[in-house]
Image (cartoon, rainbow, N blue to C red; front, side, top):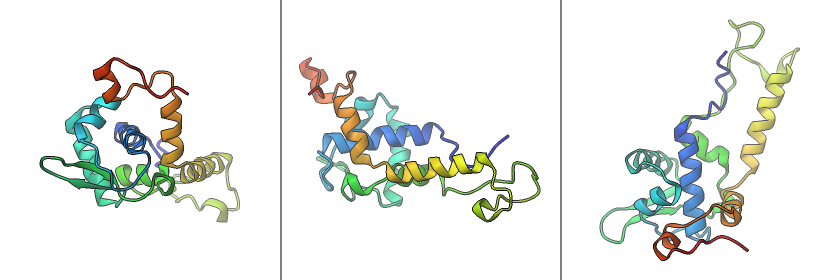
Length: 163
């Protein structure tokens, strides 16, 4: 059964990973540029696919891009103002309810339905959670993650991110 609701695919995962790395590398500051290759290396993402994700996120107003020497990508606003739901919707389209679980020919009416089923309640819980979880929170998690190694520290051989 396809619920049509937040079906996270590789694009969404890569976008969250890349923008989290961007927030970490920039100190969550809007406007500070990071090379696309550094983001790809920092999260072990394919650069070609990452470029497509960057285009989607730029169209959604989450990041800005600058090409050429000294170019890269930057957060368009502070990381604390970008939610995971913003990122997922930029890459995977708007959140929407799918067909009714019980009656496939009907669209889910959500809380307006006389039988607001537990599945839809949990979907809504996830949507709310994603809308409340910010890129700044994700960056803090990545910063203290024991496996975090930034592209800069790989060149010097030193792990970063521990406290």
